[in-house]
Image (cartoon, rainbow, N blue to C red; front, top):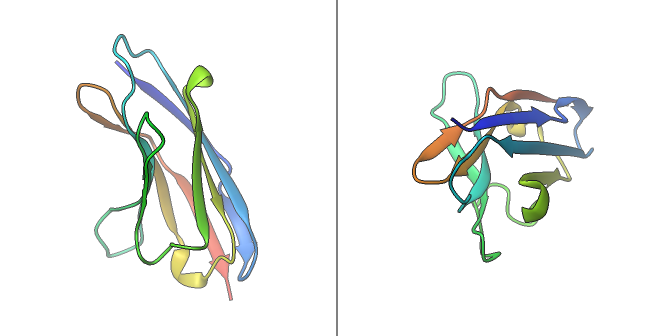
Length: 114
């Protein structure tokens, strides 16, 4: 069973920055993709950034140019650097990891005030 430990959420003013971290542990299988999703109140969860083991990245259009995903494979850790935050980025952010199946973390709240 994979455990995901997220950190780095919080309250920030519009235009500010936050960095999320997620450490994955307990997997008997290699980790393939790692990424982040988010879910705002009343909306469906969406993937906002993913990175494969080979380093290929994919971003939702709404965060392109503002968010940057990175990972440290040796530490099984994925990061999300979020810059130029907007109130519409307010959501619970979930770590997402794929081994032989996908896993989601417990989530960390990000609130952007206007």
